[in-house]
Image (cartoon, rainbow, N blue to C red; front, side, top):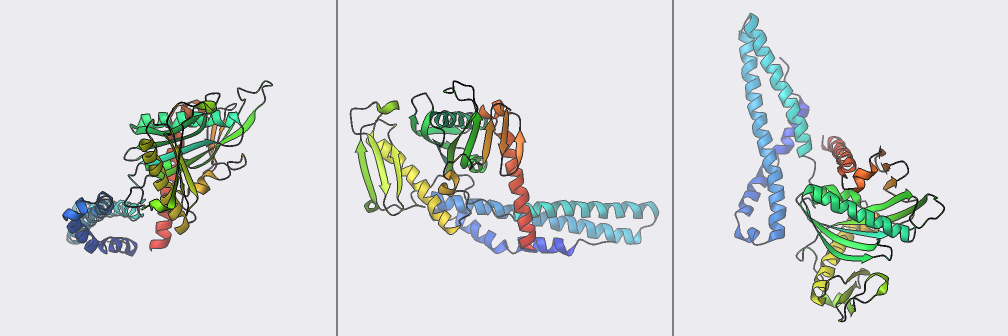
Length: 368
């Protein structure tokens, strides 16, 4: 009878190599010091659950090997129909082992370090004047609908409306267990092709808006020295520059070492606006630091936003054809109204599948 392949042996040996780390993580989870540090607890728990899956897979492998060995021994001494039945048990066990090996490949894919985080999203109108701002508002509505469909909580941090009811800029946070997993693909220039409401000749125009997607960072991860900050306060203003508050409640924070600037004015309290501005600044600084370590990282806000030019785009929304095209994976669907209403999984799910297949291919090439 044939035996499990050496390729399977190598896969499971890689799982077994983490046994010591698993025991160490068990001890760290039982340590009160870990429980007292939310950031450390999140990282340790995430890794522990990944390694728990390793342990479970090894236990399943051992059971299958025992079953295959027992059936093989019985097949060698049996005759006729009994022998054929035991040989079928061996084949069935080997098929289960093949399926388990595929599962193990997926387990060995490194987890996203930002999985489980809340997400900060920034949308700005780019090229196209007021039409770009109107499109930015459409994207904001799309993400609100998407969050509602998934049961995520969306909180607006800052919203600067344009004169015609569009969006000059909006920043919001999305809270949900799998929010980052789905929204991380949205960073970059988005392009729209349609007849603007301001167009009297009925001609199709091309405009764009930029989206930046940042995993939320906490104070422990990103330490900010107050001496590196320039903090300006001024009166809040509404659309068209109209003052909506008689006190200096708006806040603009400039982080001198990085040059990053964050402005908040939606809350009536200066303290609330400052807290929200610091929340966004921490997320931007986290992405900035990680992009310096890895220039290809998708959380690099500057590469996401790009120049906002119409020729740069990750996705095109064509109203005349009712078409949405994601240029990164060559996906085209004709379900534009549904997508803009929040049914964004028509695009996100293929992106998730492509990412999974790419990571599996990388794991296969690099691991064995």
